Length: 66
Image 1 (cartoon, helix red, strand yellow):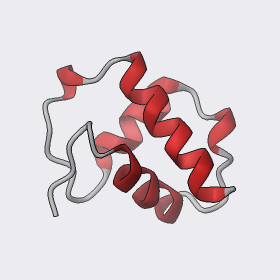
Image 2: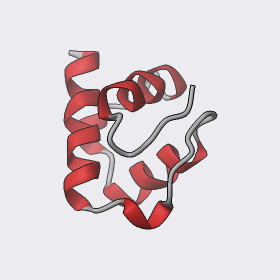
Image 3: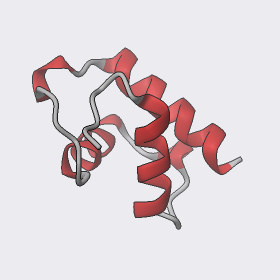
């Protein structure tokens, strides 16, 4: 499965599995971006990521662990 920046829900699932002890409410966007880029299966241009994309991923991650 190839993940893109627009796959915020799927990315959130992967992040919740990779970082089970992390509260996504307290993750800064620099770390979040780096963690997404490091996910196995992530295949998108790092330059296509902005604050709104990261916010959507963070919100999906918060929903996933709630």
